[in-house]
Structure formats: structure tokens, C-alpha cells
Length: 341
Image 1 (cartoon, rainbow, N blue to C red):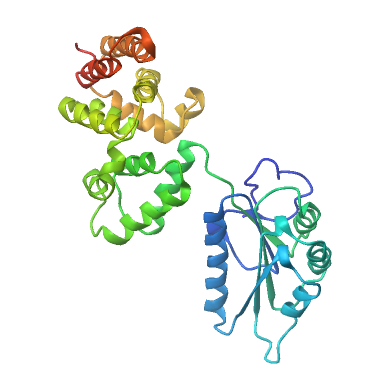
Image 2 (image 1 turned 90 degrees about the vertical axis):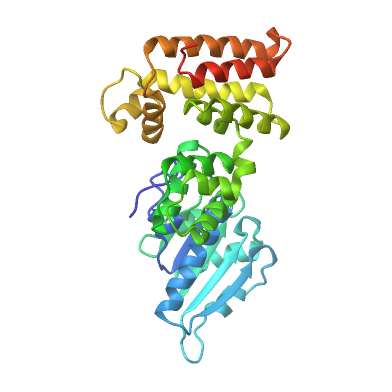
């Protein structure tokens, strides 16, 4: 697959395949670029395991680009007496010495036979000429692009793929809980997914996620909103108290409700598949599906009441009323009753 994965690199000068971390495959030169170390580590580990499965005699060497000594790359790439394949892993190429830069550029032009050079570059301008040289090495090099996940939809899709690759079933609600609880750190999100994959024997449900990460999940604003939207008033009020006791502020809690109600209003009278509506509504397909599920049982009048209650709660938590917590509790009552009070 040669599809470009990053906008800034989508230039005519890029003549090599640009792949995701899980698409890594052997090539004489493998550039692992981007700031997300989790994906980079997985890609490099995956390549090592692939090569070792092909030939257990694989020799593995490591080079610190920031402490590189002249001639080191050529020495490690040279064939041994028994001509075993060699995997040479270069770390922190963005901090490389001048010697590494010059010798690596020369090496890319004529890589050693049965050697695989992996260059990890986390970003920045240092080593730019080497990156350009590798990206122009058609037929010799590939690039594994390891960008951060910034959008909620990207994090959701990543977590979903974690369970899919492990052939482990997880309910949509449980998946949203995990993503909501660990959205700030992709490595933590991956770790949470892997723990559930390893420990849960049956389908992973919201109850299973609560058992493992209940304290963390309960303190998120979106968890409070989800429980209220499910019509569980008492549980939503309890969850609100847990969130507030954990340091949450009423303002982002109301914002979470507003985001969900706005999404419901968008899809309430929209027709078409989630894929068709995603682009026109400015939402991801999974967000359309979720908003449709949340909107079931709601009337137009109920949504109108909820929007009015949201406006009142938003003003209250921003200073219009003396008790912002009571304002959020009042909002929960309106949402849990589908706008009927």
C-alpha cells in the first residue's frame, strides 16, 4: 500500500510507500517517522519479529544517532563470516551527529545486501536531508508514518482496531467508555485495551470496563452524560457527585451534555446512512450512529426543552446562578426524562 498518511509529506518528492505502523514490512531502508513513539515501537518490534521468524540467526544491532562514531554503520552492515541477515536500528535520528548524517546518506544510495536499516526520526528539522534522501529512494525504502491521534474519531477507531486485531468482542458502549477514560494519552489507551484483551474471557461489556476502570470512567463528563441519556437519573446524579469529588468542574460537564444533544439534534430528522451523513453533518460515521441511538425515544419538543435547559445550565455554571451544581442536577433531570420536565 503506497497511500500517503500525512499531509505535509504528500509531495511529489516522496517516491516511496508510506504505511501505517501495522503495515510494516521488510525493506533495505525503513524510515519510521513521526512523534508517536507507541506506534514507532510497535512497527520496529513487528519488523524484528517478522525477520526473526524468517531467519532465527538474525543479528540485531543498535545505533544512537546522537552519539554516532564514524564508520559504525558500515561496520555493522558488513556481512559476517556466515552471512546472517542484519537488522540495524537507529534511534533519535533527529539528534544525529554530522558523521551519521553524511554516512547514512551515502549508505542509502547503496545499502548492504541482507541488511535492514531502520531509522527512527521523531520530528524536527535536524536530519532533513537524510529524510529527503530516503523518501526519494524508490524501490529501496519505505516509510512508516507514526503521527499522533488528535481527533476523538481517530482514537475510537484505534481502540476498535485493537480489539478487532485480537478478535475480542467489545460492545460499542464499553468501547466508548475506554476511549473516554484514556483519551488524553494514546499509550495509556493502548495499555487499557491490552489489559482488557488479556484478562476478559467473554465479550467486553460496560460492566467489565466498570470493574477495571470504574473510578476513572465515572469521573469523566461524558460518562455522566451517557448515563443521563440512558434515563438513569439516580445513577447519573451519583456519577456527577463522583466526578465533582474527583475535581471535575461543572462547566465541562455541561459542555459534554451540549455536545451530545447537538449531535442528536443534527441527526433527528436526517435521512441516509451514517457514511452518507457524516460528511454533510461534519461528524464521523460512528458519531452519527451514536447520536441516532441517543435520540431514540426523543420528540422534537423534548429536544427543544433539552436545548433550552442546556442554555440555562450553561449560563448558570458560568456565574448566572449561585449554585452551579444544582443547575447541573436540574439539567440531568431534564435529559434523563427526554425533555419531558
